[in-house]
Length: 391
Image (cartoon, rainbow, N blue to C red; front, side, top):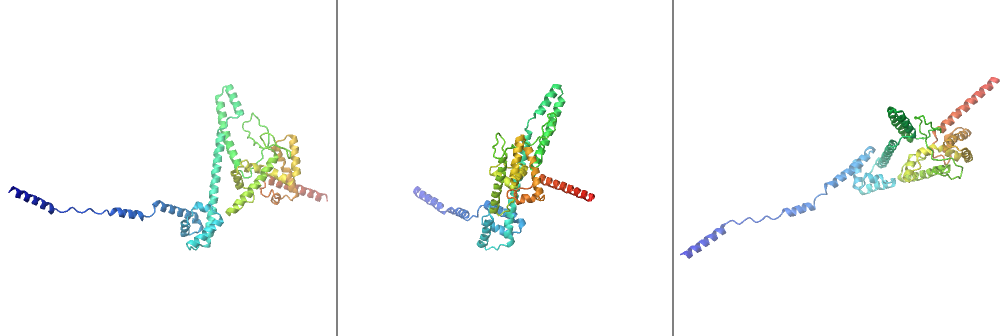
């Protein structure tokens, strides 16, 4: 009896377990392959698309004012060209790029687009050069002002300070200090304006400073001394042969600048301009600058036009013990005499000479020739009038 009940209980318990609903089968991991597939066929990252858009927008901005179509700029960007790449290419390379654009994409470039691409590249180069020049000029101004701000008091003002201290007047010292600050500001402005002058041929008379006058302008210190032909200068200053050699170096730098401009397809300078002086500075010849070379260009002109007269003048001023400023002033008179023999056309004299044609005529030399010509004409007219009266 108990055995049967136990068997029935076991059977009943097993039947109940078999009647239970089976658990749902686990879902296959379909998400994993899907994600892997999506990662395999995903588009490139967003930053590459943004980079392409930036390159296209840069080319569009470069070509905007030159009538070049948007799709042309987009095709150029697809070839892998950027604004910086185009700026570093020569005209021949730009032609090859445009030919490749026409052959690969079967894109018909308009005639105006071919010229517009080259013109836009040249304009962007000029704009970058102008920015570099203005940045260098600002740096030069800051350097000049810093140097002047760090400049100490001169001996003259130290003497004034001692006199004021001895007399017991504190207000006098303060007035002298404020006057020194104003004087330094004026000197800074005058120095910067003189460095920016295109001709840089302002003449300053050589005279001795009076220690009692505080408003005398500081004289320009000439970096040369008067030497005879073939004489080697001693000391810190250089001789006149070295000065004339600098002009020959400028001619060589001009030839280099012209060859570089021809390679880039740019306009070649025919005279020594700021571009030549910038190239000389980059080449390491920082001792060649525009104010110095323009200041003595008429002395070099006399050396080229009449070397014997130039050498005689050098010997004369060397014997007198004169400084280079007095010699520089004396070089004007022989040049005016040469201009009188050639019909007063000093520009023609410069332009027809092989070594002087690359230099601009100094403004003061042109003014002296004009004034001398007027004096000669006036004296001739007066002489003619006197003859008419006698007859």
